[in-house]
Length: 111
Length: 114
Image (tube, rainbow over all chains, first blue to last red; front, side):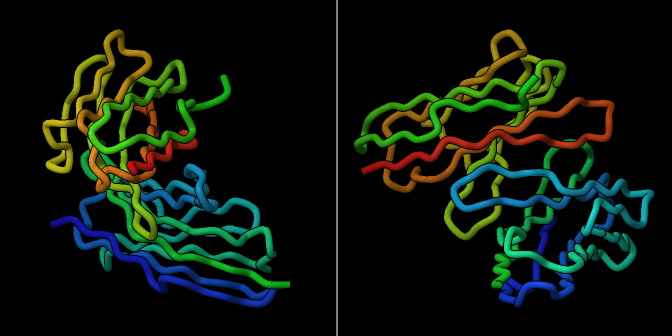
């Protein structure tokens, strides 16, 4: 069964810290992996997409890495800000059909 | 193009009533997906279309649920005889097959069944 797991489930940190969010998946035959941000009661905003042939992607203070062989991805957030507070979801695409989501990491960054 | 649009944003209904949601994807996208999300969980796949063809339906989609995409553009999701367990956020997403397969999500429709 294809499953996606995210650790930790919740994280609370002071402003300015560098963070690492973890995602693991059981089936390494992925097509791509996406990281999303979700604010309370809102839809999903795509942050980064890593193709199966890639090792990492960067956008501003965000860096996502992918290790297919170990079934892991990490999202690194540098110099966290209160505006980064949200739920971060990892999702894996298999066979170009549908995304399988993790349950998310709820992040709170306090001033 | 302003992205994926979903209507209504919120829907409150009584148990047993029928509800219908609409999704307008990004215009050049040929794939459209419906997901359901309950509090504290990640989105769960319900169904998806390629153009007007419904290619896959999840076992989560009981016979009270039906989705259509009649002209390969907008889609509707109907729930008949709603139950309290149907209360959730219903999310629509679209993508272009043959591209990077990046999904773009709408803001969702929050359904509350009383």
